[in-house]
Length: 335
Ligand code: LMR
Image (cartoon, rainbow, N blue to C red):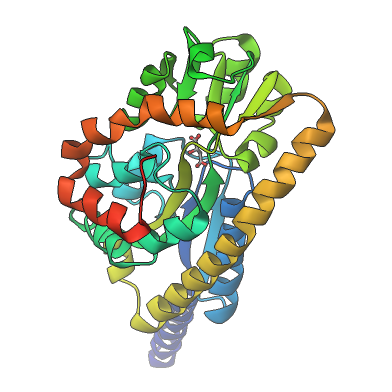
């Protein structure tokens, strides 16, 4: 009898050890959601992060990627991060203004940046770091910035000069500054989630929209837009963010490996963004489905002149000091 009890006790102890080991071996799962296709700069950088994170933690971390708005779209993503339903995102910088961190609207200003080099003077410098810090009271930790490219205009009408915008319904992201400059051109801004744009363009709910070439290509907007004007009128980039509570709760060695993986993915992203947008333009051109318009310097100057007052109008929202130090850092000229 005694022996029987001893056997059962030993068996239970063994089972509990096995389940403890099994639990200890469960990987930490990072759900990483984003809205663009896998073959965009953001999609590829997310895949590279997954590869490094899983390899370098020797499987202690598993990264589940959900591209193409599979799980969430637009602002739902940020709510999901807040609730802990996902741990990592790379939303466009335009998403933080509506969340209450208005300083991020800096990145939406038309014609602020004229090159990736200018952008990096901000994102890789003290201003970029200071902006990411402003996300922390919202339970968000910013790990870095990922480029996409410059915004171009697509429409079912040839747009050469601001007068051509009159009355056009243009899909925009939900951002005050974008709303202001599209109105300044004479268009009618329509806020819409990225995942709904193709259909809205196809059915005529909107006449046009603005995006980086890699998105115009991978979302096939060029199939349902007769014209693409190379306007380079704004910057589209992302912040790689995590739920701060989740991040702070990770073992320190894991956090260090993941930080390194994000940094390497950032480097990879920013190397491929420029190339991917150039390749996308060539692919769109070859498709023959949309007519590509290159603006003359005079036309470009007109586009710019009409929207430049938006900088001044939005100065109070963004913060005068931040705007002035940005101008200084990138040696910005309004002409
Ligand atoms: C858009 O909504 O147009 C883009 O910002 C989507 C993205 O993440 O590139």
